[in-house]
Image 1: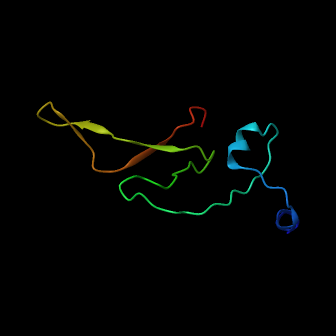
Image 2 (image 1 turned 90 degrees about the vertical axis):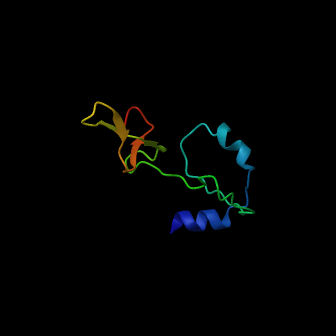
Length: 84
């Protein structure tokens, strides 16, 4: 529980805009308040189980007997990290 105690007793806070200036790897805690949810937009983050990069929804197609193609009805997600 050392990490929790360290966080609770740490009185140094920075704006979220400063996250990009962190040079060395470290754990950060982001505290925020949800003021609204836009219901027609995806607001959650689908992350890869291996590398935590964002998952992208892909549509798989298949060829039909008549020579046309169609999209499969199942959702397929692919990691956006090309090295994963």
